Structures are given as structure tokens and as C-alpha cells.
Length: 221
Image (cartoon, rainbow, N blue to C red; front, side):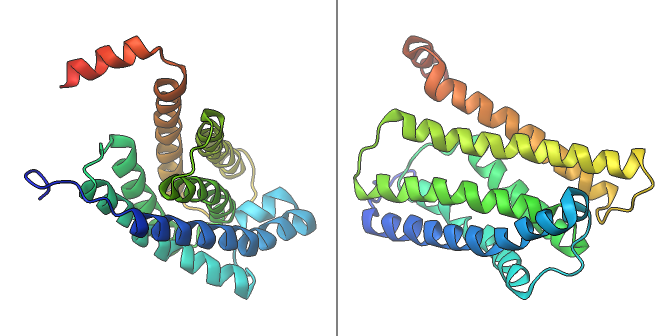
């Protein structure tokens, strides 16, 4: 589609797009996390990740918006294509996998989703705020982007940890937990692969020597 066309700038559209998603993610984190943290305080970790039968109306509303947002966020790919920027595997795998898992979790009312949604809202608050400021033209030091990537990577590691704890609840105890084994295995696959991909991205973006990066680029051209 864009092979013989010049890249679009789309600066204003990109600022508005990322800014809107940043505001949405911040509001989503503030509103949804309240229910999750209250559950942790009142009922403990086990019930907070194994029971989601009675979320507050606010949490239910923001979990619905979260599911819808995974479709909306596919627009990120459109901006990359129209601006003729590199479309890396991590990007489209992440969007596709999260959408599939969100739909599956929503259909099953998977209880650990409360933790996963809270973490994702927080990570996207940082990510889209960074993207919006970058699109506006604000040049930030390297450590800022490193922090954003670290938050994203930590989210994946936390996702693996939560999934492992839930797995132990379901297999090592007689305690019931509102998550099917299929959904749990999907969570393991997604969070482990995301963790590996984000660690690889972090290494290449911030730790690898420039010469090595140039050599890799020349091999792919």
C-alpha cells in the first residue's frame, strides 16, 4: 500500500492519538486499580486473583473499556505503516496476542485479569505519555525511554509471577480459582514470550554496542 508512496508526517494526528490513549490509560489505571487494591486490602491476594464475581460497577465499566481499547490500539500499526516506520515482530505480535487473550479472558471472566488489567493500564500510561511527548517534539534523555521499556518488561515478569501463583493454587491446593487451565496456559505463553521479546528489545536498544547494531542492520538490508 505504501511501497511507492512518500511517508505521511501525521504529527498532529499522532500527538492527539497518543495523548488520548495516555489520558485514557491514566484514568483507567486510577479508576480500575482502586477496585483491585481494595480487594487486596480487604480479602488478600488469593481472592483478588481467583474471584471476580462481584467487581464494582466502576471496575466492570473500565474492564469493558479495556477490552474495547485493545481493538482501538490496533491503530498504532496504521500510524507505523503510513509513516513508513519499521514494523517489528514485537509490535504486531503484542497487539494480536493481547487482543486474543483479552477476548478469551473476558468470555471466561478470568479472575487474574484484575491484576493483568491494572498492570497494563499502568504500563500504557507511561508508554503513551512518552509517545505523545515525543510526537510533540520534546526530546527526552535516554533514561526516560529506558524506564518506559523497564516498566513494560516488569509487567511481563509480574504477569508470569501471577500466573505461576494461580497455577499453584489450582494444582497444589484444594482452593478453587476462577480461571480455566486453557486461559492459564495462554497467560503463561503470552507473558513468557513477551518477557523474552522485551528483554531482547531492551538489550538491542540500550545495551548492545553500536557497531554490532550496524552489522546486524547491514545483514538485513
